[in-house]
Image 1: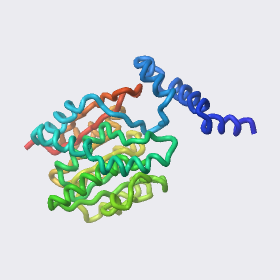
Image 2: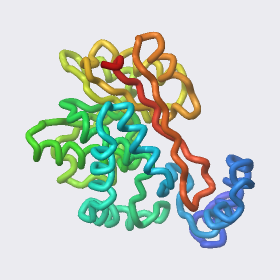
Image 3: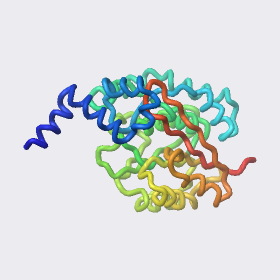
Image 4: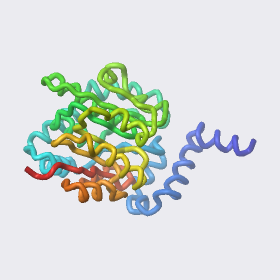
Length: 278
């Protein structure tokens, strides 16, 4: 009974949530939090998120150059696609309406490195894109918006997401889901069935972040990759699976590290496995 009362206090009162966040940071992120004490204090006092942190980043210029080099396109194109998403008020308002229903999420969407996902989808014009690990669906929303704009330019595309949580993708409204399929199954089990007879242009790993699981996904996707296919990992800052896969398959590997603004979290990044240079 006492344990349940303490749990309610932690989640249902403002003081309890502050105490919970302070303990969470101390147990999981003590070292980066000490390096950014003001951002850490701001997080503890007012940030509702405990997982799937969202924030703006301060190095979009580096992201644009990374994308231009990785995807062999002009920096100006990367800048244009980036501005397209970051200035998309309609999408931001639609996502904000859904975010407002959750006490554990910020009220506005902050895309961070996912701007790079959007730019890549706009540049590649994939016929089939796959995202493993959907969670709230913020990354999915960004990808689906890119595919929507691609269709307006005459390039049909579809996104398939994989997750084991029935509540995954709750941020996606019906309009975004028009060219979307969510597969509620372990990616290692379901990928062969979904990819059978299909060619894959864009693959994003953001599911279980363990080397063996991540590598298994890449190996299952490999026979279906088109000649221009690109693979992104949302975990390449922590695990070398994508770099190892790229080396053993003769693909190029590149990495971008984001720099969060006004947040204690040191940031993740984008690992990219790319076709050999032309």
